[in-house]
Amino acid sequence: MKPYKFNISAQVGSGGPTLSYDKLAGSRVIPSKPSVKDMYEDKVSVDTYSGTYSICFETHPLAWLSYGGSVYYNRMKGQTYNLLTGDRHTGKSFDVIYLMPEVRFFYLRTQLSTLSGSLSGGMGIYSGYRHKAAFDWQIIPLAYTIGSKVYGLAELSFGSIFAGVNFGIGVRF
Image 1 (cartoon, one colour):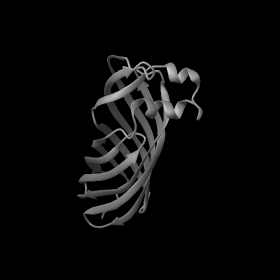
Image 2 (cartoon, rainbow, N blue to C red):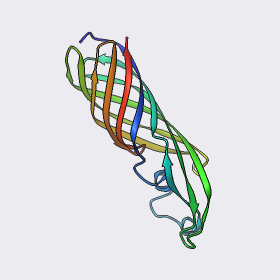
Image 3 (spheres, one colour):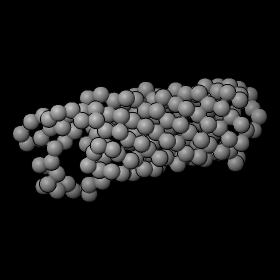
Image 4 (cartoon, one colour):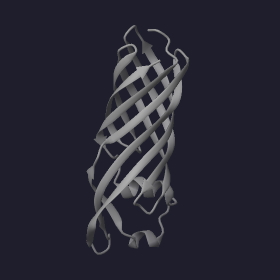
């Protein structure tokens, strides 16, 4: 495979959030021992999930290593409810944008395909929720691309953003 210096890809994730939205944002912001106040606050259940959309940019300083970053987007809808009374309130929607620096390791490179994995850690910015930002992470143990300059990709992914499979298309230059 020709040693390209950069690549950009757009991806759609097919999967779901790994935890309920309240756990997703709350467990990373609230200290490890929840306060009494947390028991009385309304919680959120995720009823619908948009999927994960992302754009990734990477640079390749070495044949076996690349680094860059991704921007992910999720939209979730659900209901707020009270744990003590069981009362459910009107629906609520939340938007989340994740800014994730990434390091990718290439296991195998051939003329038309690559096999790799990556680690990401960054920040989720929440809209419509009591927490405005939190640490997020994503691990992709297996990513496969096919094609040279324009390529298709499939990734097995899990972490605090979502668990599932990413599919996408990218360009190397």
